[in-house]
Length: 455
Image 1 (cartoon, rainbow, N blue to C red):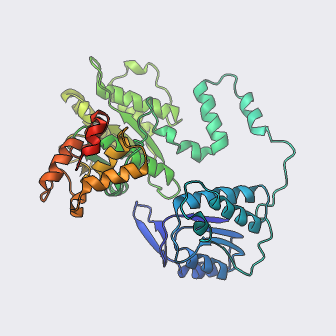
Image 2 (image 1 turned 45 degrees about the horizontal axis):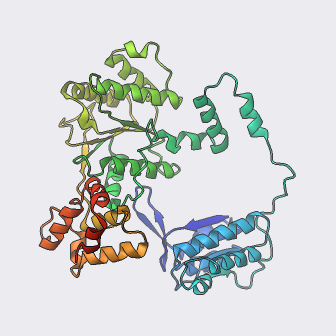
């Protein structure tokens, strides 16, 4: 079976190019591709996208016996697509026929609450070929009389002598597969829960594209910006993006996220390296050094380099501006050795300023300056965070009121020329495009003021 889910186009199936950009695959080439492979390799195809009728017809004409798609002239609403897909696959999974499952999916759309014109949305789904025999199941598995306990029993037998961490790692290995475990989001969820991007992470698509491009072509990349502009959120979003595409982004097989901590009386650089070593040990990439706390920086650095010798790793060092002058010097020496002793390790930094070195271990630093959000996304972020705007309609009305009649203002940033006085004043109230300040404003501005902003 093949399931495609994405944005639709009348003549293309939009795919990703492996670098965060689009790859426009012409729908008419689908049949050629299938014919070159000796015929349709699928019993069933679901093209879950707007304007997917042509793609569906192409799959059907190439010999796929069951194809679900959307009418060519129609746009699907996300709510309808989710309702149909959930019920359709549930029905297929329990052994119902394609025809019955399709009808169940349509009924689910029709019964979806808060979906406008549900009847019309239901009729957008199409089952092809129209004259085909769909009164057959796709998943024709035999029913299980008892749920298998093999994996659970293997885990129970391993409990003795294993720590909780070891057991959790084994559990993810058995249930997610070795590669799934190795590329799981656990790599980024270090000792605090913050490395996931904020719930309302928005307006950074272009920045993500540029930084990802640098990561895939360079070995040392810095995201430069003032605290509060969203550097950490951006790199966390990029890490998740890479992890979710582990099968296509081959240059990164492992991600280690290390956050610089504000500690007094301790060597922050040393703490960074110790934290990295702990992550390497947890990942099974290194052994725990004996008397690790007594080792000097050179020995610790050597240990890291040996562990990462042949690993395609991305190491993220967040908030490196917290390092003091002597700590920064040690950190640069560590990076210099890391790049000299490894060939496939990449480093991503967040900082206020560039490192200011022509090269480290023969590697040149590339940087991306991260500025504030545009006026549009500043307003949208405020609207999502404000406790006084409860519904999508409330947020839409708020955005339209603040946008005003001059639509061209929405794409501008706080320091752009051409910003009107009205937009400048609103920018100042909402945090000047700095997400941290916008969040503070959203929770501090009273309801009465929110209701009158932009009026």
